[in-house]
Amino acid sequence: MLVAPSILSADFGKLAQEVEAICEGGCDLVHVDVMDGHFVPNLTIGPVVVKSVAKAATKPLDVHLMVENNTFFVDLFAPLKPKYISFHLEEEKHPHRLIQKIRGLGISPSIVLNPHSRPEELEYIINDLDMVLLMSVNPGFGGQKFIPSVVEKAARLKDLILRKNASALIEVDGGVNDKNIHALKNAGVDVVVAGSYVYGSDDYAKAIKSLQI
Image (cartoon, rainbow, N blue to C red; front, side, top):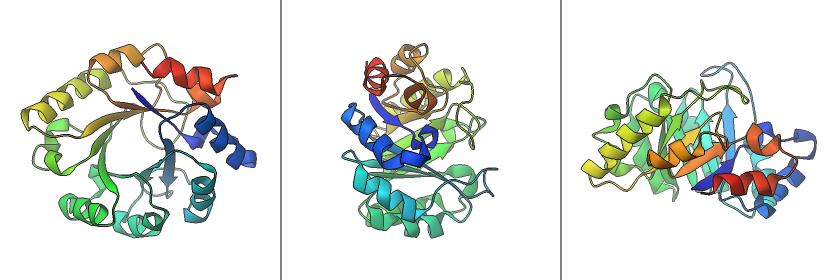
């Protein structure tokens, strides 16, 4: 299991040190939540701050866009060369076109599904994706409680990936901890985002390692 701690739960007063700490603690990716105050009722960080995050990070960035006007934000963050850029299917009228654009920029494209969205909606684009991010909370705020139905949803997505002979990874974001990590692993999940579980712990490395099963 790959672990991508979300800096949304970090202490922004010492953000560079917080990013360095999770990288030294053995994380696999650094998850960056970008919110515009429109698609979700919260505002987070722009490319100037993420540029500093990228400088501090020794692991690849995993940028999760929770925004309206996805193309505009892809253009903003692409110069930082993250490993992944994820956008929400619910907000995109032309997902296939945007997937091609992201890949053309040398970045791995990923689509996000909100808790109510069905994995079967990805059937005709799953082979074009490098990752699918399943929200296991409602997007917008950290520290929320895990929605258990995402385990069954992940298993259905895994079946779709296998049936279509696709190679997309499955990522889950929201309320992930050492109590639900085994169920997620058994459902076929490859990557987990953990914010408050990692940054709320006294030992970042220990918390990260407990999820790398």
